[in-house]
Amino acid sequence: MDGEVTLPAPGQVAILGAVQTRYEAGKPHQTYNELVHEVVDQLLTETGVALKEIQSIVSASQDFFDGRTISGMAINEVAGGYLNSESKVAGDGIQALIYGAARILAGAYDLTLVVAHCKESEGQFHQITSTMFDPYVERPLGLDEHIAAALQARRFLGVSGAAEADLAAVSRKNHRHAMKNPLARRSGDFSIEEILASAEIVSPLRDLLAGPITDGACAILLGSPERARASRRPVSWIAGMGSSTDAYWTGRDLAASAALAQAAERAFAAAGIRKPLDDLRVVELSARYAHEELLYLDALGLGNGAAAKARLATGDFDLGGKLPVNPSGGALTGNPTCVAGLARVAEIHLQLTAAAGQHQVKDARTGLAHGASGICGQSQTVVVLRGDAPQRT
Amino acid sequence: MSESHWIVKQKIEIPFHYTPGPALLRFLEGLRDGKLFASGVRGESRKTVPPLSFCGRSWKPADDWAELPGTGTLESFAVVPHGMAELPQEGERIVFGLVKLDGADTCLAHLIHTKEPGKLKVGTKVRLRWRAERSPGIQAIAGFDLL
Image 1 (tube, rainbow over the protein chains, first blue to last red):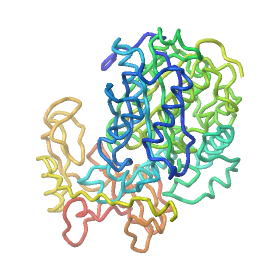
Image 2 (image 1 turned 90 degrees about the vertical axis):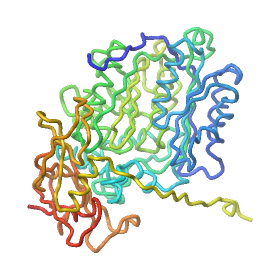
Image 3 (image 1 turned 180 degrees about the vertical axis):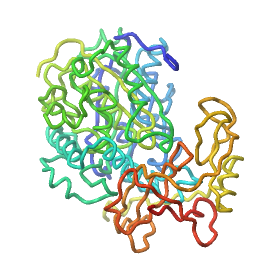
Image 4 (image 1 turned 180 degrees about the horizontal axis):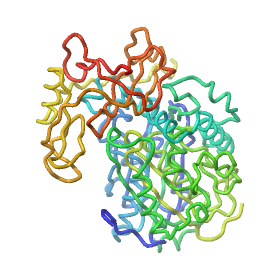
């Protein structure tokens, strides 16, 4: 196929551990490098790996949110990067994970630390996200991420036939899931009416249909098969990875995601997944906005012929349903930019190693983690993970 | 002394002067003259606005120019509530639209002028309105009116 990349065979890169901070509206008592230190220190403790054993680090952050360019400089030491090889991705943390996996697949390193951080609370969301847009014809209008997301949401509603109540149903499900996740930023048993009456951001977006401003960090330790065999804790395996980037947001139909369909096709082919709805047991999607979850589920084919909203209504995507989607609560309940995609991988790892606690999905052996970046999800990444053995709750 | 006293407040202001390439220059000069230009590859039907110098798909120069009529279809719209401090508000609520211009295959984001944003629908036909007073760049366009 045109643009096909060579994909790793299953089981070549393992996830040895995954740690997230609590997600909060603000973390005024920690600098961002202290957030990174918190997750890396806990990761070393949990995995029993010594700092000096890690020689490869890939980080993910956004300079505009950090208020500093080459902000990787400031986290180098707390990420174990002193006199080691550290490289930074100015995109979602799941892309950093793919680079980290490539470092191991290349045989260059047997361990790679992947870490993402962001303190959205310190900057100004409108001004920072407006700098994503074309400076000649778009930025003078005052566009920002919320406005673009609202345009995508309206397009999706208009084309798919979904109603605002369907978006509210996504929000209701995820905020209920988040009640079982002690790290979640926002949770609650909100009714559809409450969600549709929450404060308007940019119509049709409302407060409870969009992920709030959040601070947090996530770290994951990747290892070679040898490292995985030596691990004292359960590991999960990267079974397939796929990435694809679509046209700029004004050059495609925002109601669909051809890039996600292609990224999934690549990841599924590598992981041997033929019927995603049957073969996957848990899904974590990077959907900061409620409409994105339905749009992405449709692009992944998880509606299985029907629109995802129909399956949502039957409870299939609930914790305890046929295929739980965002049992952690997901990005809609609060994960910052850059961290959201890596947090999805962390959550799937917890599920596959039976370490997800109250939001554990029963018998989770295969899961999908998804990341997105760019205006209206221009760039899409899918990682399929497998557990070592059947897990019980 | 409270902890908040120690919060370091800064504002980063970096002036940029973005220079247009040849395709964008022609587009901007067109706006100045009240004309809307798109470009595409000779022999291909796809046209983009704002125009590009080359096509990233066929890898050929996009030097086939077309003047667009200024009508189009509302692909989507978003209504900004009153009080969104960062945006100028002149009485009525601001409505952003994505307009698929007739004769082009990409959308242009701009303002939609309507007194009743609640009645807008995806697929509504719109027409470009030029600003009465001469304004540089994309501000030469006042927005789109409903047809």
